[in-house]
Length: 383
Image (tube, rainbow, N blue to C red; front, top):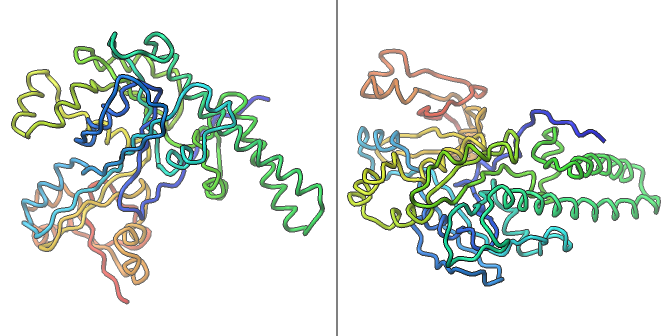
């Protein structure tokens, strides 16, 4: 069967949560925990061997955003709240797990509850840290992990199809049989794609089908960031060599000097700036990785401002004003009247909200207005 590749809509991001969740996965001794520490300023222990246990480290970090800093300087609020990202370092993955009946329940649960996956791939050399495959080969390791995710999803779908076949063979209510037949057709379509080594994220799905599949914990449905963990003196442009190994709208490849960035994350701000300049690094890796994550998940930020608080909110690209109101509080969406909106750049040019109103750059928008990245939004509502 020839599988069909088309543009699709991403699995719906839970924009009503306080943060997006990114699960860090990888083969043993790939430096996952080092990357986790680099991204979170964490101090999780790293060892030059795999314990074989399922270990999980979690941290929530602020999303660096100069716009929040500038808005805070303008309003001098009592509280400043940045958008946040939760990173979870999940140990326990290895070659063959997808074939051996799929991932264990606990491991699958830890991975599946994330909005996207960050696959750390070893590209550094260290004779003291053994590679489970015997040598360093990023292309091979990328393919190993992709295969494990595909096999895991095939196991889940095959098991469900067997249960559907059993239930359909017993007769039953016509409506139930119709629902099972529709589910069977969808799962057979996904299984055919997986057998062609096409992940679920690359299969065209309707919004209803995507919603239905959320309960299946299909790992190849999630956006994927492949992160090469390179040596301190390596060129991050090496990532360009691996762009075509796993293709797709929601796959990206980047490189990070994991050990160096982990050291940087433990420094004081002034020392960190000097360190960045010495190694000619334009910005900490966290900022770049978060931008890539936002792009993969198709989310962006809008802001609310005032004397009490300046705050960044994360919503999907394409979200409307009433959906942005719901991200703040469901009552605002329920009683939505209008949204006062001004672009960040226009507010900075005006110098104040009053001047922006005078210039006409502060405008009223209805509930169907599509909120843009950097919009400052104030919701008018009535309970």
